[in-house]
Length: 149
Image 1 (spheres, rainbow, N blue to C red):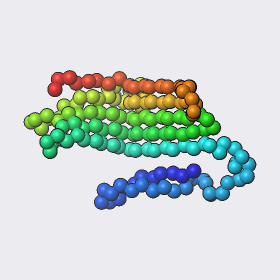
Image 2 (image 1 turned 120 degrees about the horizontal axis):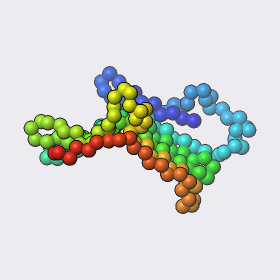
Image 3 (image 1 turned 180 degrees about the vertical axis):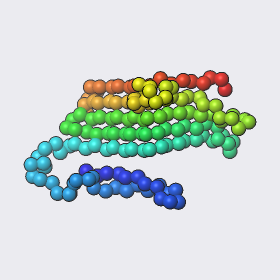
Image 4 (image 1 turned 60 degrees about the vertical axis):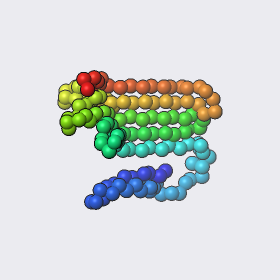
């Protein structure tokens, strides 16, 4: 029942803080102790993540992710993993200062039915200690790929 919180200070320093989840006093009731003792869930939210690849002291490729949500957990003997992101974009830098977009999400206009969907979503549920996968789901909204580099 802990929560990981993220904030950015005025100087651009990223701060992660672990604190008690809202509404939890830290005191457990006896009846609650006898319930699922092996249950846990870890949830991580990242608003924006940008990763760049540098070659010969120049940036050549950039990956930008928005609205990342990662959740992992275990309930009794069942385990789960869920990751999704609202936006995924890959940019390629070339000589001359231009920035061609290599991979980008399609249908970003306000009336698109795809706008509500996560760009990429992967979900898995399985039984711990065995090779039985109860659910595996991978979904992705339409993307376009620019091959004219």
